[in-house]
Length: 161
Ligand code: 4NP
Image (cartoon, rainbow, N blue to C red):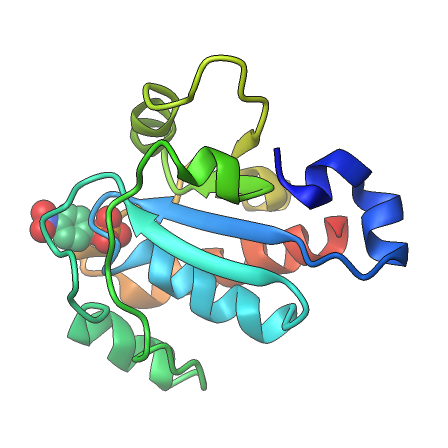
C-alpha cells in the first residue's frame, strides 16, 4: 500500500502527499504516453508514469506519428521511454488506468494477492464521450481522434482529484 492510499485522498492532500497515477496500454508508445503527456500538463502536482502490457518497445520513445499529432497541440512527451507493466506497479501506484478492456485484463492477471489498488478504464472519466475504450491509433491511424478522447478523459480524471 502506498502512503497516499494509507492516508486516503482528503488527508493525503492536506499533508501534501503526492498521488501516483500509472497509464497503461499495449505497446506504451501511442496511447499511454499520450495520456501521460496530456494529463501531466493538467495536473503537474500528480506523479505520473506509463507502461505497456507487452514488452516489444521497451526503451523506445513514443511513436513518431503520435508525437507529431500531439506536438501540433502543444504536448511534448519526447522524454518518455517505453517500459513493461509488472506486478510491482500495483504497490507503487495509487491508481492504474488502462486504455481498453484487454489492457485491464492483462493488468489484473498480475495483481498480487490482497492488493487493493484501483484499476480503471480511462474512458470511465469521460462518460459523455460514449466510448468504452481508447481505440488504438497504431492500428486505426486516427491519432487526432485518439488525442481528442484522451484530452476529454484527462480533464475528467483531473476533475475527480
Ligand atoms: P499502444 O499502441 O498500445 O497505444 O502503444 C500499439 C503500439 C505498438 C503495437 C501495438 C499497439 N505493436 O504491435 O507494436
